[in-house]
Amino acid sequence: MTRQQFLRGTLAGAAVAALRPFGLTPAQAATRIQRVVSPGGIEAWFVQDATVPLVSMEYAFVGGAAQDPAAKPGVSNMLANLLDEGAGDLDSSTFHDRLERRAIQMTFSTSRDYLRGSLRMLREDRDQAFDLLQLALGAPRFDSEPVERIRSQIGSELRRDSTTPTTLAGNAFWQLAYGDHPYGRPSNGTLESLPTIQVDDLRTYQRKVIARDKLKIAVVGDIDAAALGKLLDRTFGGLAAKADLTAVPTIAAATPPKRVQVPLDVPQTVIVFGGPGLLRSDPDFMPAYVVNHILGGGALSSRLYKEVREKRGLVYSVYESLVWMNQSGVFVGSTATRADRAAETAATVDAEIRGMAEEGPSQQELDEAKSYLKGSQMLALDTSAKIASVMVQYQLDNLGIDYLDRRGALIDAVTLDDARRAARRLWGHGLLMAVAGRSSEASAKPEPSSTVPTGKN
Image 1 (spheres, helix red, strand yellow):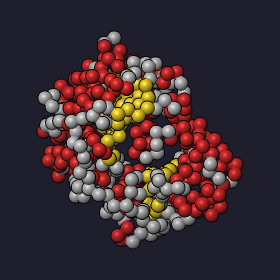
Image 2 (cartoon, rainbow, N blue to C red):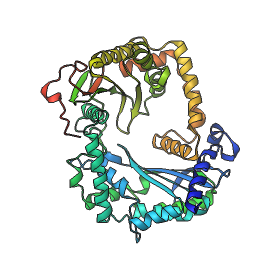
Image 3 (cartoon, helix red, strand yellow):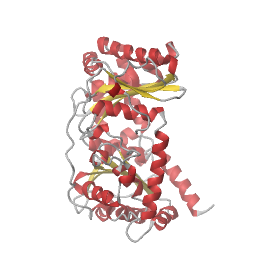
Image 4 (cartoon, rainbow, N blue to C red):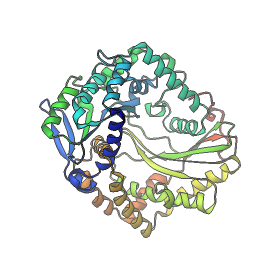
């Protein structure tokens, strides 16, 4: 067995074993979250975990795809794919060799509002791992070979997506909901915008977004607070002090009902549906979160699943969830069915959602949902990386360092009246619906401007 294979196996086992900081359950671990402030003033939420020799860090910069130039969607996605492709005096091959030799796991991703990253390593390799991250964030190279290689890879994904009904329906839904607002643009870019993205665009984005004042960090692992503080300064201390973000306007999703058809000759028709939702700071968010679980978030137990799948046999699966961004919120769901059954499926989904808006849940449904949501969160925090990821999200949502301790009581406090009020707010206005597949009465006959050509992404 090589050292690389040994380290990979150790990391995999450590990730599972890191479930219990100090031998505690995730719920108990929440009470051990510390706020660490480095000598240079960089803050992180931290859970010390000495059960395995592993350190996991998750972090996020406010920015994301919403900071892409309007004419060049996809800049943030391309940057995220290139940050580990060479930095400082290390070209792409050498940089990856350094990661590989130590089995360091470094990833970057982008969403509408955030540029996110993760870093995992064995305790003995933490200095090398944090130093490589400092180079990736502060001195990326953007050499021509990796830039064109990554551009080609993204282009292949976009060409595949241009004939994938799920992606086409999803993109059409976001465009229908948000139009020309940054949230309406595809985060991964388009086939038209990708060739226009230049290295100067990447460097401009890096300077605008990667800055200390918009940074949230969470760390779980076998390291003490003093050592962590020094590593935070080494890694992030050299970044720009303040981001230079373009203001993203607050917006409500388009008012339903509206539908759009994306013609595509495929065996299955994909239906993406949704409508205006709630900001995370809305007082009705927790009631909405609980009642949403009853409607579409409960997998095999949800109303939508029972009515559309079990009772009528129209689909294999159907889901619906709340999505919140910094400047807006939506609920969004998806399902797929045969083209000749798409109209019935769409009508059934619409009727079930309207029924929840008009009647709300029963007391039994509410009690069962609250019990599930309290228990499932704890079961989901089964690795150090997941705990760190949740801690970062709580910071981004401004929920407070004690939120995991308070979450159960907040769920318990939701009354039947609260749930019914939230249901009316969410679902009392009809649906936005994007349908990708063969022409069908699943969608109301669209006006010419409402038909999305399949060649666009």
